[in-house]
Length: 455
Image 1 (cartoon, helix red, strand yellow):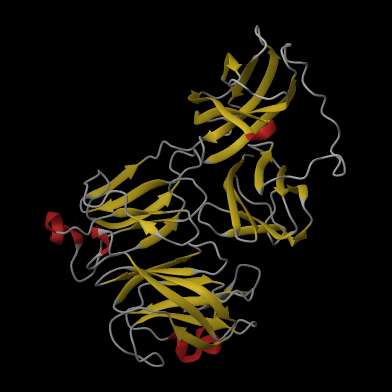
Image 2: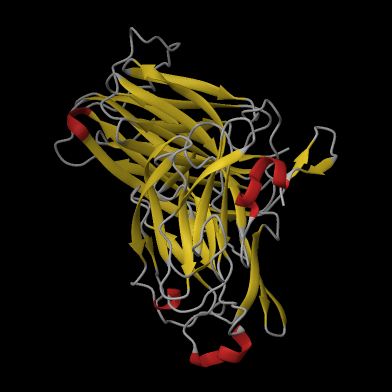
């Protein structure tokens, strides 16, 4: 059925008027609504599983194209065989929606490569033969960012109406499992565990991905053969507030530094804190890395001394302290700049001038320099660098990988740029509290970082 909202919360059944015989299915286990062909309107993805019915006269997954006015007449079959269930999301981050198909034989991913609006979508199909838990009958499936790295991962149940999971029991490899996105913008899903039995690899009728403990990461609710199981994920990286101070070292080739990380949220937070130093002649060094768990309002302080490598050149250096997931996700950072001058002590930190594009050196690499403040309410400033003229796109995504807003989409000159997000979606409405992701694209380069909106 297609129920249309009249704008005041009243729905009318316009299935036949808008869809005609495209409404037909034989045991249609799932339907999702997405912009599949990239033309700005919502299309329908549906499944027909048991026997041939017109107009498909086939079984599989079908895409129904919206003609722009909410009516559906053109359609195509996505590459699919004995499909039982599916879900839709942009796995390879090319702005086209891909389809994960749960098949009675072997699951696979239909990766969308290009689209002709309202006519067709070109797919390539990747099987998941590397995972022993994606063969045979399967059940419900959902995308979500399970490991908080900014891309879509996958969770799959093993229910099937023909062989209930409690009857297949331990003899079946097909139990609830999760697949990880490799994060290389190819849409590749890997199985980190294979047949290793984890507590969540159980026979499961259905499941939900939701934030049970309100700590911004996705937890698991499993409907198993005799009740429910809940698995709480304790891995949400924290966006601690950071401060950094520098002092002269006791010896000519030393610099003393001190940092503070404070949890300003109302939840206990766990995250990494680390620092690096960069300077002339591509000098770079990681100066420390640690993990901290802080209660609401709690702060942690640390002081240490950094010793330069032998032969480190004189010149301007920058020490930066980060919080997030070490060497992976940057949620917040703070930097101080100073001058190393020969055999003398370090000088006082360099005064920070007001930003001036004409006085700043052009960046050497494409970078996403995070947002500040983070966490934020209601607005935050996002900074990034473009080393050469390029078409730049900056999107805000939710934890399910859905685009919330596009902040930048234009050709930009090389330099340092910033933009403010006020917490509104594309429709101008205020979004809910929670985790969101920045995704910055320039040419073939794609960078992703995590941020937290708290109200």
